[in-house]
Image 1 (spheres, rainbow, N blue to C red):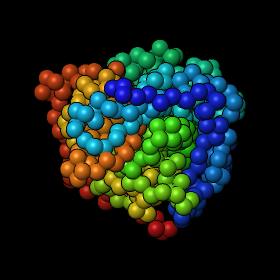
Image 2: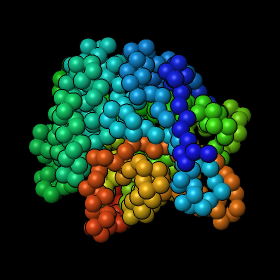
Image 3: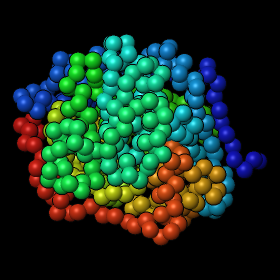
Image 4: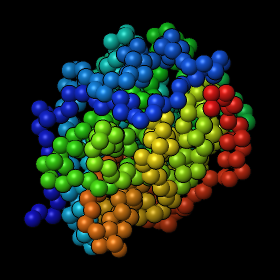
Amino acid sequence: MADQIKYTLTEQDMPKSWYNIMADLPSPLPAVLHPGTGQPVGPADLAPLFPMEIIKQEVSGERWIDIPDPVRQIYFQWRPTPLYRARRLERALDTPARIYYKYEGVSPSGSHKPNTAVPQAFYNKQEGVKRITTETGAGQWGSSLAFAGSLFGIEIDVYMVKVSFQQKPYRRALMESYGARCVASPSTETNSGRAVLAQNPDSTGSLGIAISEAVEMAAQRDDTKYALGSVLNHVLMHQTVLGLEAKRQMEMAGDDPDVIVGCTGGGSNFAGIAFPYLGEQLRGGRKRRIVAVEPAACPSLTRGKYAYDFGDTSKLTPLVKMHTLGSSFVPPGFHAGGLRYHGMAPQVSHVKELGLIEAKAYHQLACFEAGVQFARAEGIVPAPEANHAVRGAIDEALRCKREGKSEVILFNLCGHGHFDMQAYIDYFGGKLKDLDYDAKELAMALAGLPSVAAE
């Protein structure tokens, strides 16, 4: 049998609809609240930021949402993405487990993020939007939206978390190659950025700060909207195209996952791989272990509080109930910049509260060790974010070895690390350190959570 087995689908096999887990949740999500009135937000409250089609998807309870044909035509450039059986890794681990991974690094920007960037750009173009503002951590989302903006002729402004802006110049160059403008956040362009810099001129930034800047800029022009690359319901729904593909590919392989693993920052790639399986379970199908793996330096699921909070530092966004470390929390500058967000997607947080998923947290050295082991076995260098999923999958395989179980493990390799080689250089040079959050800062951030009567 071949060392590595690849399972591919044809264009005709690609899903025609996204899956919306809202239709199958055993209890509804807590309402999104207006920060001024404390009342549930309506479409009119969201219209200044998002096109109406996106707002409809955000609040939809329909199980299946059709993928527009123009979006599918662009998806065909890289979708369906491959699923691999990691036989060489299995041998290296000497495990009876069977390990599969869905590989999203084949997209133009090298990650799963175009799965939502393309439809978001499409719906904005339909509404006549000329410019979109956004934030990005490590740059996967910023480069993906830049790619999508170039396809639809939309101007893209990206506020990139400053520590990642400095660590990852090639991602910045990729955004600029697609025609986007990339600004280090916090910046002097916005009231939000200037307020942070006045308090801390050396701020390394955070996704919460970058979101504040992007939202503030979007609100200033009628021809401008805002786009988010994770957390929101419609974003997680767009990502389910990868999990729906994986289900068909696992059927081709004649296997069915016992354990599903995904890295989690805001929750989009995790939901993309896990929600189609979880939905099947909620409709009476087979139960599986679903494991969300997050960074120990920004552990919203394992250390955060399930509470209403703002999605940004300057408190410009609506209040959502999620696992949060507090909107003012600024995590240390570890290399998995895409996972440095203070909150977790409301849908992911909700299913965690319902006991439907598990969560684990790892420090970055253990994750880079796993990424290197994976690269030497499978030939793909994962992004620092994806290394968390690799670590989780390897640990599950080693557990199977200890217990003598031949379980099937599926994980999402959400992107390649070709623009993250400085992180690997630092790792091999002994310069990469495990970073911990400041416990006092976390306590202060949680103490500052808004008081919401609806809780």
